Length: 394
Image: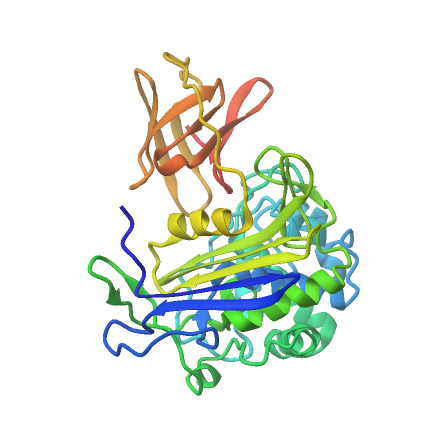
């Protein structure tokens, strides 16, 4: 059972207006209450702001990255020349997605983003550009750098001018020295929950997941986007699951009986977040928690708030043939070993455990995580864990 987060804020938007519901505290050490104006880190929900900035600047999604960043380099020079803005927005650029994940938390100068993108020169390809969905934080670093170059100002200033201010997101910020002038929920982990330190993070990561915002501001962003979505939800590429596609950073899912759900999840050290819209009925739901363990709870709350369908029950194959699935897979930073057991496979990464198959190349790991094995020329070549893509190396 997932423990309750120390602090939680829910927000709804529908034809009746907006409403908020909060409970808990900003910090287990200093128990002041959270409310709709408390700042939370929202992790990858930040990608929606980066995508909106790309749209606001009129960047052609089919332009090559090198049209905007002529010095863009990867370990595979040919791939670097072929990757487009569309590939970045839809997580199909194919290069190692997290080579920059350990950048120093005190890297706060204005040159941090440019250095991080330059450091991708050593990033290997996990798949050819445009071929497979593989969730990429590094790809959104590159998009943030494109915003910076096209706008002619630091990414954070451009995002504020192009998106945050027009949307009425008055408290939202990427900077901790601005955040501390407002009520802030501190991130927690463990059981019982404890405050996680350090709190800072590299400025280079702001475009992929550095926004600090409130439930009220995210409802303002939802209202702003629903009023004039532009290309936000247009299908730029297929998503990682059946009946899904990726728009301008939005994950869009077809709903049974018609309609769509569009949104993004966020998960980072100490925090989880969800922003979900129903574009065809003008509804939205936001839920923010200052706990890194609250993801499944937030998913259930979102489904209940918006009437989203539950995960269907599956029949598992009794004795799947997994010989071609076994081996070692990498995403350029991490490795996962796949070993066989009588009713499926076991993944070496902590917390994933056993995978039971519902089809020859598709299964569910612990906690319902979607697992797919992808094939090239009839042989298993890649493993996808939800959105994470890994290449088979042995």
